Length: 450
Image 1 (cartoon, helix red, strand yellow):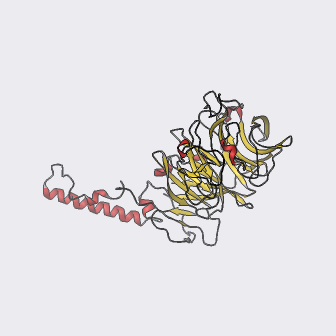
Image 2 (cartoon, rainbow, N blue to C red):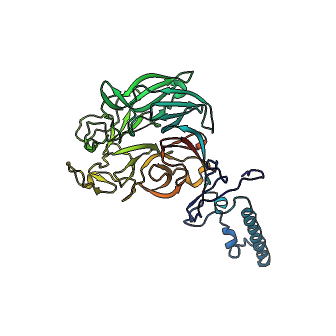
Image 3 (tube, rainbow, N blue to C red):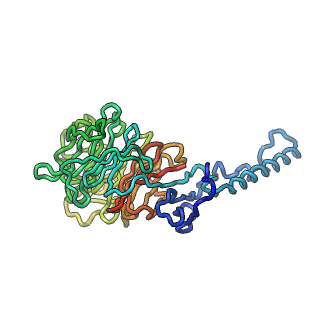
């Protein structure tokens, strides 16, 4: 690891950090310094491969046919060597458990772009350009995801009605972008007197202008000042996945004919994939892939497995992360969390066993979970394959680890450092990118590990 040459900036901790906890660090007097938090490792479940086990077992180790005196001599030499290695390691700048235990990476954050107005989502083209949507209807294209990268173009998505949470929200780059130059956006738009959440397909031309191609989803998803969802991604199956909230009318989530309160799966041209499920009460596949959702604002797929997870806001309790299964009903508004009956809803409901439980729920509190993505790559160490979720109310990032069919909350990062956090995306070199949702002076933040 390389360290900056002296003089080094003075660092200050915001508070002490115990095992598995965190501290803020930065240049003294500079609230926007690049390195904002160092994560201390969690207590290991068992022996760590770098925890000097040979020292502990030196006397009882097999001597492989060596004479007893020679074996003891080698044991003493090995013990001394390992102890010296440990001391040398601990004397390095920034050393300590986080440095010795390489499996747990050091997590850093850095401002990439600033001065934005409620940026909602971020995505990247194969050549590295960074696309950022703003709720007002602006889509910005930057040269790359590096700090201070040049703004190449500012585009407007037409007829966006930005009220409350509604506006221009999710964006997704086509997996064949290098050939077709297409992107998809999800936006709340005026359409001949109707206010609808729509998925639109655009092409980015050689001058970084948006060229409208078609509406992939035009009708069927009502918009509202809140509960719009509107996360959009294209996964390895080549389909466009979209989350749509109930738009403030909870019963829509249990109506299979409505697109509200659903996770949708659609072809890039707007068609129904032949292998989409047949939902209860219908006779043929539709755009609906799962139902019973309140306000899912994030969707991600796990590297290696292709499993899809949606991040969802709860009603003052029971925020959820749901693994999305074809045809599944996740219970809203009848139930929240793990079979908790929603007493405020008086509509028709089945038994709790008729609905699928979430992979994780927040219980009696709400974190306002919004975006989510999976870390991937060797630089993330033991965190590779784990889910990182951005939170609005708690103004932090939460790390989750898969535990069978459920998710276990493991760690809080950047607690209050950047304010309210909205969307999360995995970008170039496996960095995570998150947008802030503070209303003014918003930013795109890059999170790296190593």
